[in-house]
Image (cartoon, rainbow, N blue to C red; front, side):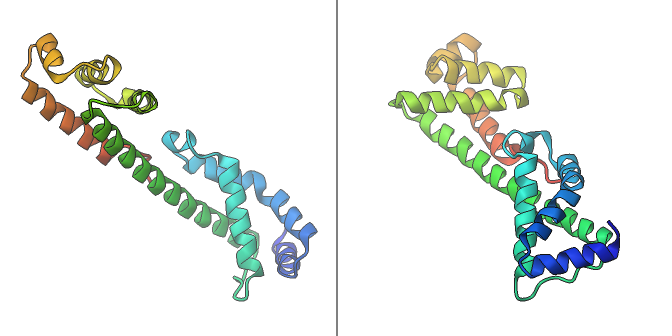
Length: 189
């Protein structure tokens, strides 16, 4: 499809032609999916599907084209650059949301682990959270998480097993949670 055909198709889409919108989607779908897939980090792929991002971008483009101040499209390459720019923004938005969710999950897990009376479903939730981040932990951090979360041991018992003071363990724990809050989540670049 050449530049003039793309301009004509965009004009039809602006006029509400659903067949033109479908044709535009079919024309760009694979290129958009490839561009989005290349931009998604491994962490984002776990929670964000490439095709969902692509459909969201396309829906956003259609709304913009049909809106009162629709963007001027100058041809095939211009429209593709617009798609890529929209993909970048959408992926960054997903990354920010995931980062906020990850920090909130760490805060919630920490608060719940301080409580001695946890509901069974919350204990499972805490364990699930730490299982997801397990690969980011050092060996000593994994041991600490296993003892504190996995085996639900008190600080006194953990200190005796590891031959470390309770205070030192609490400091390690606090630093671990702080690091997870700061670094957990996808990289935007």
